Image (tube, rainbow, N blue to C red; front, top):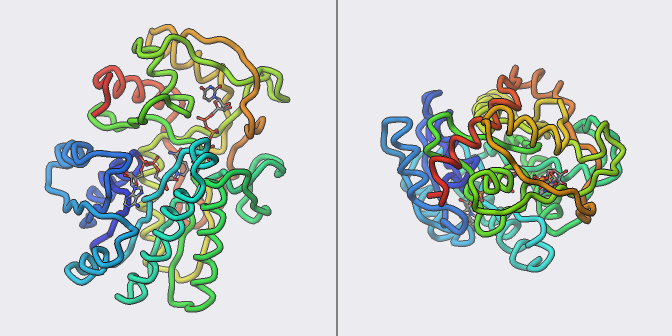
Amino acid sequence: MAILVTGGAGYIGTHTCIELIRAGYEVIVYDNFSNSSPEAVRRTEEIVGQKITLIEGDILDKARMQKVFAENKIDSVIHFAGLKAVGESVGIPVKYYHNNITGTLLLLEVMQEYGVKKIVFSSSATVYGMNNPVPFVEDMPTSATNPYGWTKQMIEQILKDVYVSDPEWSIVLLRYFNPLGAHESGTIGENPNGIPNNLMPYITQVAVGKREILTVFGDDYDTPDGTGVRDYIHVMDLADGHVQAVKYAERHTGVEAVNLGTGKGFSVLEVIHTFETVNGVKVNYRIAERRPGDIASCYADVEKAKRLFNWETKKTLEDMCRDSWNWQSKNPEGY
Ligand code: NAD
Ligand code: WQD
């Protein structure tokens, strides 16, 4: 069973390849390295102890994708490829819409051409928008507040329409909450370009001495300690969730949105303090204004993932903090 993994050289993609290979799948990674490097795949090969088929290619390059489908017997696609920085998407919306949406449309055209009708798509908790109460349940109304979020929202709609047009499709829309951590080897992990936007890479870069101080965005939210609450999920649990989603798609047609989270929220201060305790390092921080667009609390209702996939997370916030630090401290400059 070969799975085409678009964006498979990236943070979540590499970790998912490990779990797919462990589960017995053959993996074909297709990535243009716009936010990753072949080195990440090389290290993933080291972890799994076997070669991974790696194709440098763009989802905007239809001819190249046709060649990949023509030359390989692909059963399912896991579609990670996309640009993902919320702030950047506000500055360069056309690039985000083109890359994420046009790229997905071209991928779907090629899948239709080759009769491949199973896809697991990387959506995001961002589609729950600003107005839903927590925990977020899959049938709540969705919305977006920035171009990145709109691309997720629109691709979900496109995929729902594809299923309506052809009920032989199996489509899983995975709504990830906040992935953290790294493979326990510490050889692969999250490797943001430039100044990190997300909390954990910022914490690890402060801890390793690359950045001076972490800014905590607001301590006046309606949460237990006033700082933002999020559902942090270990990337290896997330990776396993993809294997279960692929298996589900093999057995069922339809289109299903499924949350991948732990169902528990932790505040920014809880993450910082857990990181300090588990790793025995200090993280300098200061409280500042809220970041525009942030919500107070975001965590998942995880009942559907359990019911459909028989999947739930195993790892703790302590594991996430330890593994993020293991990766960063062993690789202060990334790959
Ligand atoms: P990542 O940037 O590490 O991985 C994305 C990969 O896609 C990169 O390797 C990049 O080079 C590749 N890519 C981008 N555009 C491409 C194109 N046109 N053609 C081929 N390859 C292309 O990001 P990630 O954190 O691993 O995220 C994977 C997916 O999950 C993305 O779609 C992202 O939007 C989604 N997601 C991520 C998070 C998160 O917090 N990390 C949360 C929710 C959803
Ligand atoms: C987490 C908490 C911040 C940085 C983003 C995307 C979302 C999804 C996951 C892709 C918040 C606080 C952060 C910092 C801080 N990605 N924070 N100082 O915003 O929940 O979600 O990544 O789909 O779409 O929006 O994640 O890690 O940026 O923030 O205080 O330097 O940490 O305010 O409460 P977020 P995050």
